[in-house]
Image (cartoon, rainbow, N blue to C red; front, top):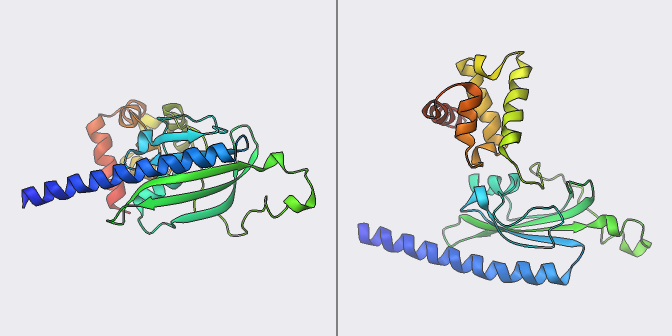
Length: 224
């Protein structure tokens, strides 16, 4: 039984590696074809904290090794999340409007292991002729998740904790147990728990041990 499980695990890793290798070709080709107005990104969803493994035309300022977005985290949490989210409106860190499409890639077990995301800078076409209107159109249907096209950091995590505490007119270290559990839900839903060193940062802000932070996280997620 152990040998069979090990063989299955090895086969899954090999399959995932193959899918990622083939996806890299697509990202590189699309990025070069639509340069300089389109960013194409490959996310390895098996490693969410440093998911970006290929990027062409980095309009958002992100780079290889950066974490995945909220949409990537949603796919990791829910295999039933839509395979393709097409032509939704998004915004780059410098304020430029982009049209985005996100394509999830599943392995044979039905688990999301990657996503290819395209962000087209439509500000370049906003003053062009009428014929470009269809090209720059976005869907009326709202995106199923709020996405941030920038790299999150532990400063964002600390700010979120302070903002949450201020809502109760309290300091982070004076939050009670129920409030701390609510805070962990907020951090989880915002994707902050995927950050490298997140547990140490939370422990420092709340004045508790990392073990206590993990307990809070487990209680919060289990109560969902």
